[in-house]
Length: 113
Image (cartoon, rainbow, N blue to C red; front, side, top):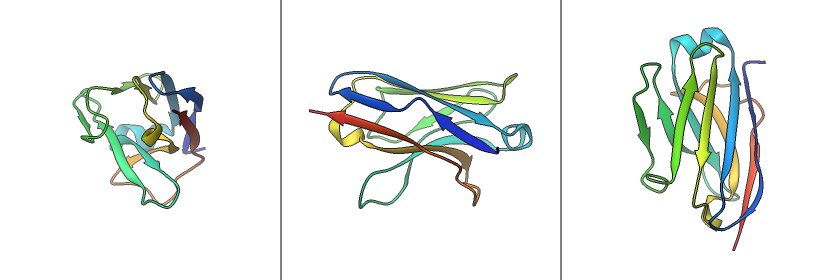
């Protein structure tokens, strides 16, 4: 498995969720890693990214609410999502930045108002 995201679920607005992604070691070591999301009827968008040194970037829509972290020893990437809003509802994927062609299995996040 190259990219395997997990941890999604259903929460009410204002709640929190944490996502995890197991990444193939070769991919993790060679790439910037990111979390993407795709809402129904919308294009997939990059939510947050992280390089192995810890430098991170965020989409303006999630800045201040989401935090991307990683574990360089376990080849994992995490996304902590706080103060969730209904517009955060989407399938979330982890992938390299720029993304590899194989997206792997995403995880559904549903935020109700």
